[in-house]
Image 1: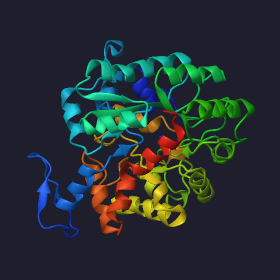
Image 2: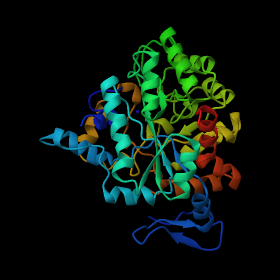
Image 3: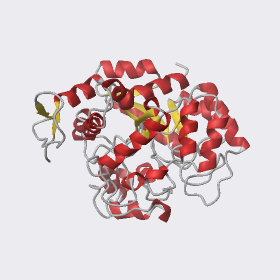
Length: 387
């Protein structure tokens, strides 16, 4: 979602009713005693048998992170800490593999962040597994571990192409090229002018291709996005963005041309649940989010669709004040926040079940839903990664 001192990612770096649609199978089930949400047996079966990947979702609680930032002594608090309560919430979410990338500003911050993510698997090997290969992904799923891919939503930590090697060997497997603003590689989505990928940026992309690190253009400006597809010899990902035509021309969403180039590259586009990326008017519900899936599927095929929620399991709207308002105010006006940040119906820890129910309602086959939930991103990452 400009990267200022209080944006969600830079904040992190700093320190009821049953579904109204007809039930597909006989019987309906509540996921946990405390849950008021009821899902069909088919929905639960589809999620449980699928490898589910959210290609942009932080593992730490955003409210906790904001509280850490606004505490009297934030340096003593760890905004990335994951409590037992959060672990149980993540386990019950239906998601198996997370990409908890954040936007960072430089080499040292990149080192600190990657080290913190690597520590999850060291601190709780019974719970977490770091993912650096498709084999890791399959093992995590098989053994009931929460898998996570180390990524960063920027490439300002790459001062030279050799830095790509450094971070690759520390475990990073995905990197956005730019966040919302210009860097040495190219332009961000909220820049006034986008000159495209620089010579330096082309060298960074080439080194990422050579090593097997995925190129992500979710926050890139339009020309930088298009250039990346032309320069990369491996599939390029849009881990979390939506269709610009359906979101009132929002700059953080992607043009039809970009979506077509993404598919031609062999990439995948993860659809986000951030409200202003879904629709530019009210109401904004999961039905409007599903419209983005339909649009991309019709244009380039269901094999290029995935999920990139761009939120923690709970979403944004339960972040306590003053953090919630500070988060909104930290972005440029181009982000066009209005009221809530989350999309209605995709704003709680079990939202992947609601999405699956919606895809069934829209007529997607079981096989296609399994691809959307994670199979497509698994395939693309397998094509990009060298191991």
